Image (cartoon, rainbow, N blue to C red; front, top):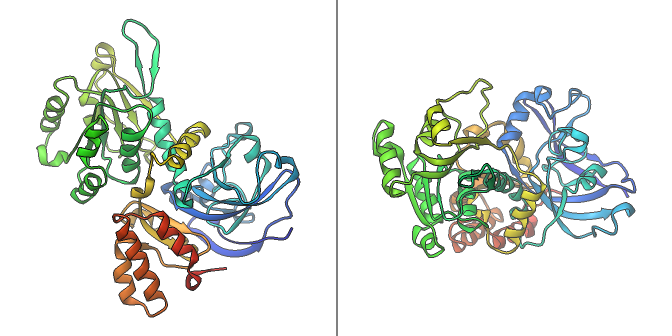
Length: 433
């Protein structure tokens, strides 16, 4: 079968090109798929900045460009005979990009010429299926499956936590059930996902503290996760801005001591790679507490103070996680399909494939959370809070499109939602192919 695609490819440092080209004829052990959504990750920005110096971008990318983007979902179009007993055309899917095929770090969205998220159609190579990284999805919206990859990073972090059982060296994996948990600098997109998982995942804390120094982000997190609803589910939830508690650590640590009734924290996650935040996390740990350094620093020499007296005498310990594995992503997809997790709060902007290159290159300077791309749509990246103002700036028929998107978002509590996605995909005015 002959399939053409429109895709954003990387040729080198800050060299991203939106191009149309034909995919190779699929082999018997390959699958052709249609991509519907891709959410943009800071890792894509890093890849664009570093080009072939990035560990997952090939050295010869200038001659053999690869498709960028790894948080994608869609539907299967053609299934090679080798996989006919496992997959069906029309089936919805998500991809776990961390294949680790034969120990390689090559991944869709970085390393492959014909598979990546910012494309209308892709050719899925056999190693994706061999590593069980093509994951069926039965939810109600493609964007949720796209966000299963970043959510899997959160799931992996929570599963990587551990505590010694009293009097033994046996590890109990996961956050402490019914314990005290803190998410620091966590009102951004990944932090919001972590709050959702902490409140609705398989292991839930009895107390959950969320901090951030951005009042607007903190207020939005509070709105998305009302403490009274969390309390009804068995968790005492509090939001606090450390800057409002004093210029030094004493105010925050005293707050934590009162919040936990002197027990301090069993589990602390750091969502921003700053020495002061790491020090906050270290100081609020209780006995046998576990600190998870979740945020990935770009500085290879990043360091922060850790109290090793407490490592020795209070059994403090440190873990770091980078990405999630296939099981983590399965858990994400299952919880989303069951309606227990809703990653919509992570999404702040929506755009079409024509907006991707500039968005990736400028990502650190674009405020808000996740930027969600619909690959069959041409549309400027737009904050979902600005659909109404966008409608005032354009003529018909786009005026009606943005007005309806605004209505659907408002009807969904100010969140991107399934109805808004379905409407956007039905808009002939925005179709790119």
